[in-house]
Length: 151
Image (cartoon, rainbow, N blue to C red; front, side, top):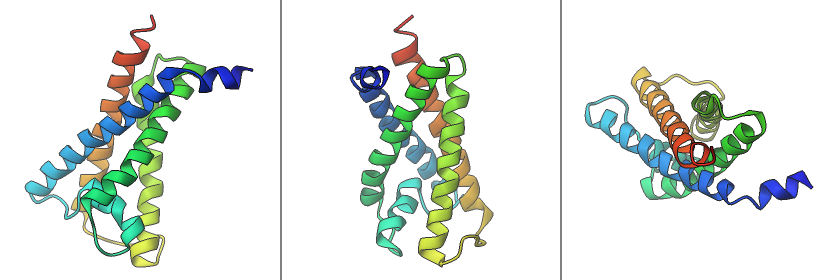
């Protein structure tokens, strides 16, 4: 019965929406880095490579990030609800960095046909810092809009 209660909770939907909004924060950070010459592709463009293989598209990447961000946001909320919401930002950071690592492996396999490839470090810095900012924004929003409201 506990599982049904968790799925009927409207906070799961709010957490998914927070996950989606926080991807926009990460994309803005990524675009700022590209403007200053750090990296070639934004987060949305890299995510679109999973579908297009060699033609980055920010719109297609945005659609894919809606799904990924919503799932991660809901997963962070459900985990924080079960284990406690004391360290929501660290939990969000852990989930996001694990997802970032798996997405990097998928990019390499799809685009370069190898699991580990070398590319310029500025691209990794861009994506890593953008993922961290995305995770912190998600954790702060979850803390403010869901967990602080329920206390």
